[in-house]
Length: 113
Length: 114
Image (cartoon, rainbow over all chains, first blue to last red; front, side, top):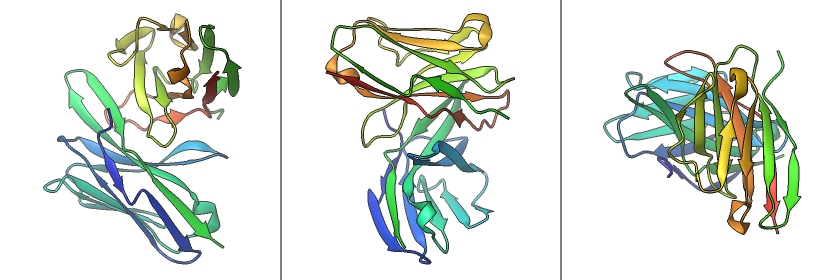
């Protein structure tokens, strides 16, 4: 079963513009991660934000987390054609000894050169 | 450092046939995961191993799917017999011992059942 729902499902922008993707989830989490998937490199981890953090940066990526609203956003600034990919949020919850990563449905980003 | 290796990359089989996927995780990673990703969806966990022990196989359809991780390194996922609905990408991932885990994914095996 999917935990997260990404919004929008698809996004098309011009190179140089910013891209914002949103993720909503259902249950309490320990951390939330964003992954990128394209045909060339498969699924790649981008950034992890812990439940006690509100914002995190990594290069051109900015992630926010609002645990009260059970939502997160991923901002990609100054987008490039190489950013074209599907982006997934994934949540981690802890229960006993388990550590399960549950993915959302993804946002397909197309960056036009 | 070599990444997660999977083979084959593509497989086309007829329904009711068996199929097997192989995964070699990153050296030193004791946790190994098998995911299934349907078209247009995110990956869904099938089974997770800690060393050679399957610690979460609640999502594995055990009537036709089986997995093993002998010696706690390589792993094989098998489907027998395959059904049309098994067409998907099967992803293997691995991670090191840490509470806040980053998973490293292989390129996946795209299975088409005809």
